[in-house]
Image (tube, rainbow, N blue to C red; front, side, top):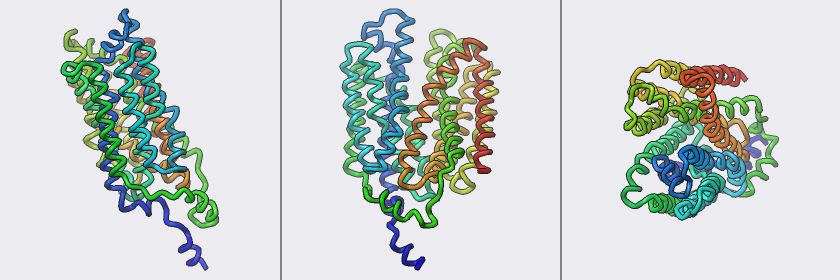
Amino acid sequence: MSHVIQTAMPRGYAERNEHYWRRNLAVCVFGSFTTLVSLSMLLPFLPLYVRQLGVESQAAVIEWSGVAFSATFLGTAVTAPLWGRLADRYGRKPMLVRAALGMAVVMSLIGVAQSVQQLVALRLLAGLLGGYASASTVMIGTQAPRERAGWALGILSTGALAGNLAGPLIGGLLPGLIGIRGTFFAGAAMIAVAALFTIVLVKEDFHRGDANQRAMNAVSARAHRTNYGVVAALLATAMMVLLANMSIEPVITVYIGGLGVSADRVARIAGVVMASAALGSMLTAARLGALADRIGSWNVIVGCLVLTGIAMIPQAFVHQWWQLAALRVLMGMTLAGLLPSIAKLARGAVDENGSGQMLGYLQSAQFSGQVIGPVIGGQIGVWFGLHAVFFVTGSLLIACAGLAHWARTR
């Protein structure tokens, strides 16, 4: 009788897509790289574009630049759970195509913006409609076999980190060649290529009736209850990863200026230091993801949180900018093991028919940290001094390691 019930159960989503996930991973890595290059390449010239749109005072330029930059992350944080839920209902591939096409259109519109208000609104719209990297995490996180999920998500994370690293470098070169507005059109073209690859190459075997079938077979031994305490710990940890990485961003230029770097070199050196963490993460993301597959995701999460917290502290005592850059590389290397391991655990924390929505919440938590981190870091720097930013962030990471250890015991 048990044999009859077992063979009558439908094949799971990951099982049906076991022949597609490697090719889909390659396309998603390329798409995540190109979309994040396009979103981050405006960093070097964003204040120039804001000034070009009619903002005159230096203080207003800085303020509007910060608002425009953060708007995309805010939009993604708001809509990621919705897109994850729709991915569970209609499939993962449609969400990838929607994100790529939406971002290509919005990026083109940014290139013809006529006011700074339009720029902010379009950056917000890019976050609301876009999120290719988030959709990629949902697809690969649910398609890859559980024993390879950590490695696959680590590879995907490497592509996204490479995009964030290369974006500002490309953004520093293109405006001089094709102009600021032309740079946005070039970014839109890159995303359009990613959309074409996604439409043609990504394969998915998705059945809309899966959720109903699984509900009818809920009596099977595979059914399990969601541990909301563990889910909350995962979301909090995901937010802390980006919060820790972004907390120093608002004050890093001032901090480097205090290390004896001349005024004409501060901006360039600050860019190198900002990119250092992404470089470190690229070096270890796939390896730490594979390590999570071998020794367990919770072990990697706890270890990486402690090591990252420790790596934050010496950054408050550096005397040369290259020392700060080296420590940021080290911090990036330990941070890299967190997101793939968290995503792998989040996938297993809920039933398969809710995995997309769960990974959407995870993406929302990450982007919330990306928005909150600079705000907290700026306020701590103003009230308690620049060195306190490193102490507070390091302490929060170690406290989060305690939370993760508690969740592991659950």
